[in-house]
Amino acid sequence: MERLDIKINLDPVNDGAEVKIMEMHKKDCGALIIGTNGECRRVTDEEALDILDRIPDTEGEIMGNSDYIAIFNQKKIFRFAGEKFFIGSAVLFKCDKKGIGSLTGDEFEEAAKEFRSRLITLTGKGQDISAYELI
Image (cartoon, rainbow, N blue to C red):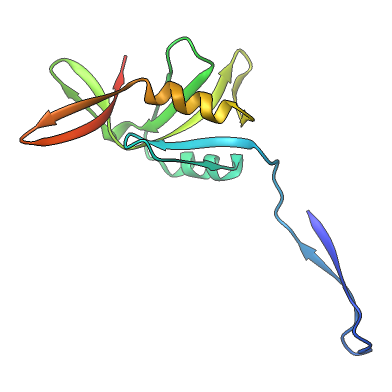
């Protein structure tokens, strides 16, 4: 998107209009990056897609009966006692019959709540680790 920047300082050499390229995105629309440590941040759709492009092997899981999907790096999944766990950061989107889409408004918090509800604590050698339990 372009913006017109006008400067008039009574300087005929430099005064006038300049076209400046601006990056724009919809406010309150995008994806959520959330870690198994509970921290999260909102990102634009463009940043989320760039992140997905850079993950070598993605895997996704719809979180329970919700409309949200967690997508993560398959190489960060491990098996323990016959179960699968993920430790790291995931990208959360909305998922419906049309496919994967942006989170909007309160959906960021709802998706985060769904993700956090599936976190468990693993312990070993005095270290507690928060992990997402995969179905």
